[in-house]
Image 1 (cartoon, rainbow, N blue to C red):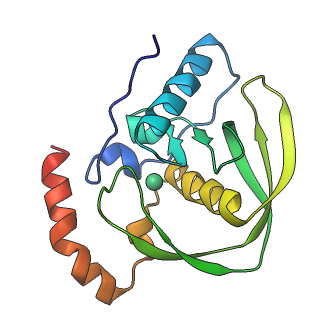
Image 2: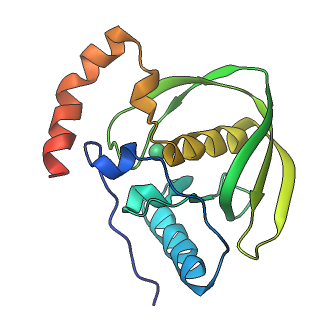
Length: 165
Ligand SMILES: [Zn+2]
């Protein structure tokens, strides 16, 4: 049985913290990765970062349609292009924001077997990677909203904040 994790909601301070880097991936981290994936699939998400379940470590999982990925200590080496797309977030249910992000990235990270990976990503995978990478740095999609969008979201966000208490 893989334990299901509780997703922290907007307003929880852990979502604004900068996550600590991981020294190496051991049994504890592998259980966390499995639990993150199970929780992500359960909620029909395409990515989930450890801070979203209250663990402030540089770990996230993603599956943009090509199978599960575990990403630890990610770095962005290069970014190019730019595109806007509407994004949601499991920590901010019901809220969608148009987010402009680079289209193509070259990234470096450690995988679940402590292997150092360097690869390029594009389209949806690049977007998911950048969204989850933001989570590790305390950044959320609402930070990309324009002032007008923020005004429209204010009520919804304060409702979610109440739930997070
Ligand atoms: Zn998110």
